[in-house]
Amino acid sequence: MKRNLFIGSALTAVFILAALISFVWTPFDHAVLNIPNKLQTPNGTHLLGTDHFGRDILSMIMVGARTSIAVALVAVGIGMGLGVPLGLWAAARQGSWMDELIMRGNDLVFAFPSLVIAILITAIFGAGAVNAIIAIGIFNIPVFARITRGAALSLWQREFILAARVAGKSTGRISVEHILPNVTNLLIVQGTIQFSLGILAEAGLSYVGLGAQPPLPSWGRMLADAQTMVSIAPHMALVPGFAIILMVLGLNLMGDGLRDYLDPRLRVVRA
Amino acid sequence: MLRYTLKRLLSLLISLAVASLVIFVVIEVAPGDPASFMLGMNAQPETLAALRSELGLDVPKVQRYFAWVSGMLSGDFGTSYTYRTPVIDMISGRLWVSLPLALYALVLSSLIAFPAGIFAASRRGQAGDISVMGATQLGVAVPNFWFAMILVLVFAINLRWFAAGGFIGWNNGFWVGLHALTLPAIALALPQAAILARVMRSSLLDVLGEDFMRTARAKGLSERQALWRHGLRNALIPVLTIIGLQFSFLLAGSIIIEQVFYLPGLGRLVFQSISARDLIVVESIVMLLVFSVIMVNFLVDLAYAVVDPRLRSRT
Image 1 (tube, each protein chain N blue to C red):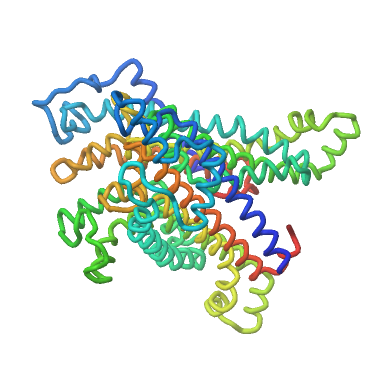
Image 2 (cartoon, helix red, strand yellow):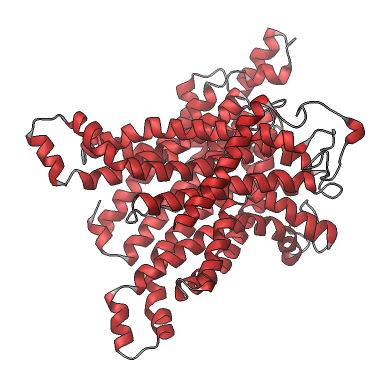
């Protein structure tokens, strides 16, 4: 449906735009404490209210969007950068020990839920945005490897690949020049979905204190701050929550829309 | 079937062995010696050496790995560095919160997802289908810990139907315990229910297009009868797989939800242990979670083979 694609892209664009604008302008300085103004409900001056330190929530949401988007985007990059070549390789050597090794390695990573990977990494290197990226990114690798391999396997049976082989192209060249372009649509759709999962994961990790650390603002930590205030200042919990929901919803709708737009036959398995 | 089972069993054992090795190596490269962390910066070298040998940290790493694994096999997870109690006791005490919570959430998620999925599939393209699918889109996008906070705000703080957090244990009766876990379970179940309902719907729609469904209709069954007698049973296979996979995610997901409700489960234990650098506890909990994922996958594979004989011949 075109409508999904439109609504999804619009929502996503709003957040990306807000994140970009926050580099040059925010309504207030997101880091400045202003205790006399604390816990204001949304009003004309502070459109989304202020938190328990009197900071402007709209400004924090805008700057927090940067963190969320950066973490999720880099994590998708890690997943694609490593997962896609592995998947292409496994498909090119289908049935070989290499294929077996890659796929079993994938199963192994799948056995570690991303939260558990994050806990392990935090236990070693400490909490932080970079470690959150690594944790989410590692989890993305098998997702992309699996989906690339699955799509590539059926492509290897097609005539045009046989033609490329007859022409004398090496397996590697066929993978890059013929297989990869044909799985790109699938990867874009899956990338959108992993992007939205990354936003959720980053929020969860920051919420429990394993993600972005102060003073770097993040939506998850805004929610953690809001938890003790929820009875006296519900807007502190509602605003970042709605930001996460709208961003994730936007990306998911965009993913669905892109799938239908790029290739109606594609059916992506949601992890 | 025996051959298939043995093959799966072998791959299960290899997965477990590799997973334990990965966890051990990762934790071992962790900077910071637990003994010097416990004794502080001004510890005497002799005291440090004594504690290291007491904790078994002076033994070569290879030997320690095998000691850890063989210990786990016999139910001995070692002794906590900070609490000086057996890790197994700490974990099993916490499991009485985390495990029932995950199971409760799984039941809730199925109770929501099944009717929703069936309803949507039987009204494909109509208003009912569209609203259920819209609701699942939203359910997938809601972070469960945020939903948990909203539940607390509405049902604990405003309506006072539930406690806002904490868990007094099962000693006061099953229903009291269950009541305390209800809000966390709902929060945990919501996103999973949304995913499950989508799977249920699409799986049912796939089955509804099959030839045997047309035969059932031709034989005189009504749309509804055909759905219940033939459609549902066949649509359940992929759904059961997802339920199996969800259990391990619920167990891991309860780590975050426990923080919202201050529940004394595995999640709180793991965070306490990380901040105290009680690595042996972290190691054991991570291994336990990974074990449960691998085990559930194994059982799902077996269940699949029982249901679908074609799979047995494949590797």
